[in-house]
Image 1 (cartoon, rainbow, N blue to C red):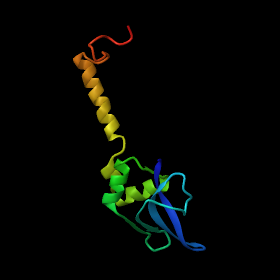
Image 2 (image 1 turned 45 degrees about the horizontal axis):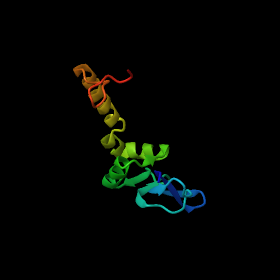
Image 3 (image 1 turned 120 degrees about the vertical axis):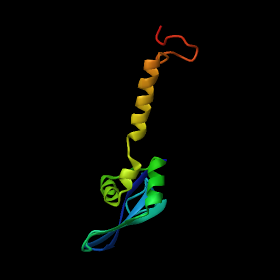
Image 4 (image 1 turned 180 degrees about the vertical axis):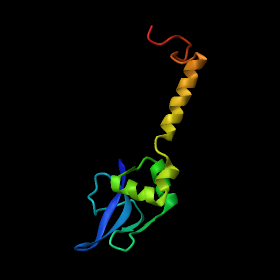
Length: 116
């Protein structure tokens, strides 16, 4: 099941309030959701944003894909910097480079060269 973090619209006409929710990607914008993480009130002066830091971080680490507007809110709240997307990929790449330098990169489990 593909899981997304997105905004769920609430409020009256021309007076939007949004809830930051985790939902199945197939569910409609204001439909069923798995968990409510916080809220965003754009008309308040200044805009009110409250997101549960720990739960948002847990969902991101489990693979939930945030929408672009949610990414912007997570950056404001400091959750996105704590998550550091792409850092795991960079670490894996460094490990592979180190392994290649040691000489066993490019070999299968039996020690034979791959591709021969």
